[in-house]
Image (spheres, rainbow, N blue to C red):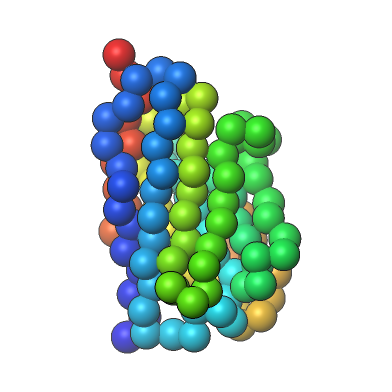
Length: 126
C-alpha cells in the first residue's frame, strides 16, 4: 500500500536550520508530484512547498521563499525539505504528501494530495 513517512523534525533555535526527509513506498515515486504541508495549533493546514515528479518545477509558499528548499531523489524514493533561518512562526507539524493524480503538476492545495504521512513536529524556540 501507499506509504509516506516523515523524519528529521525536532527542536531548533531561531535562526537555525533543519532538514526534513520523507521516504515513500508502495507506488512509482518518480511518477508523482510531492509536497510538504504544515499545520500549527489552531490554524489550517498550509501548503509549504511542492515539487513535480521530475523535480523540474518547485513551488514555494510566500512565507518560506528564500528560506526553504525542496528536493527529491527518485532513485531513493525520498523527498527532502531543507529549512533555514527558522523562526517561531515555522513551528508546526509538518506533513509529506503525494499528489493524487499521476504525472500532474504538484499542488499546494490539500485537496489535490491523496496520501499523507503521520506528520513530524518542528519547534522553533530558544
